[in-house]
Amino acid sequence: MSSTLKRLVWSALLLLATGVSAGEWNGVGEIEKMYIYPTYAVIVQGNSGQGAAGCANDKTWSFEWSQFDVPTQNRIQSILLSAYTTNTAIQVVVETNACGPEGKKKFTGQINLP
Image (tube, one colour):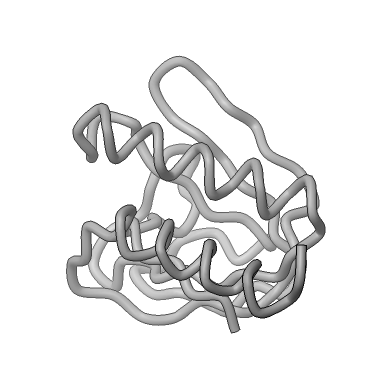
């Protein structure tokens, strides 16, 4: 797949997956590991920014699946798996006022392909 087409596909998926709330952009990087649990997910993503609200600053961010409706959950999972399997760097928005599961920075649903 050409890089232009790849970016177009990613952009379309990004627009479908956004559920934006107040937050700040996290660092840019490839996904190193994903821990997908029945009620939440924890993502380890290399170059991670500090994040707010006193959350852990250990290269991770997290979210509860129930934050999103089922179609959005599916799109987010698809985007994350695609980014992970293609070693594509992403950037996400993390909450400024709250931490997610395991005290990690809380993902808002907004993803950028830098």
